[in-house]
Amino acid sequence: MKRMLSAHLVKLSRRSPQAGWTLAELLIVVVIIAILAIMFLLINWKRNVFRAQDAQRKTDVANIRRAFEEYYNDNNCYPSVEVLNNCEGNELSPYLEKIPCDPTTQEPYLYQPDSETNVCLGNRVCTKLQDWADPDITTLGCHAEEGCGWGAYWNYCLATGTTVTAPGFIPGTTPTPSLTPTPAYDGPYACRPGTLSGGQVVSSGTCNNVGDPASYGCPRSFAESDCQGLCGSVSYWCAQ
Image (cartoon, rainbow, N blue to C red):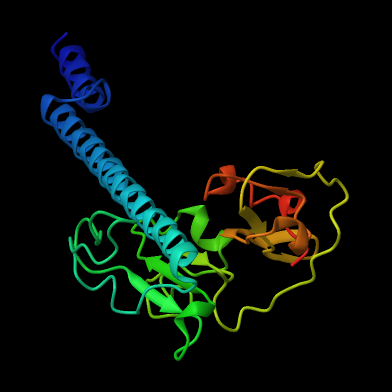
């Protein structure tokens, strides 16, 4: 009997570690899960903050471009290259009440004229998006880290009187769209052509004030300076 009891106790001692989790083990698992959950929440929170700040940057750049277009309509030229240097300044008044700057760094946005000697030919206004996964970056033919060709990290630009794509970006051909909307000229803004490669849009078209849309072979024009966001479609691109 004594021998049988001893054998039973030995068997129990061997089984007990496998029979369930100890309190210490459960606590360790709970702590690990909590840490992973906190890390996940922090990463998502940071991404959402970046996206909110990037949305403000995009709005600022769009407002600057609109002000530049209105300035051009009155002066037949764009503002001087130093116009964006004074954050919260009134250099663009009445077209823009205050000069916006980056919402986190307070760094002026980049104003890149097409010509070093003639600012009237066109320009790009650029910002640095923090969310490098933003598809708008690659749509413009830019790189998240290397930018659009005007210095590192200037990776999102809007164009006025020109195209957005970076210097050295190899343009494709722009075929006649197979489906062309019925011409509807509602204003001076139209989609200047972007870039195609293998029939795919590599760089979106840009919404510009073209003056006379018919003379540029535009299938449609808009009263809004964002062309209702339709410039990503080849069907709305002007012939030139």
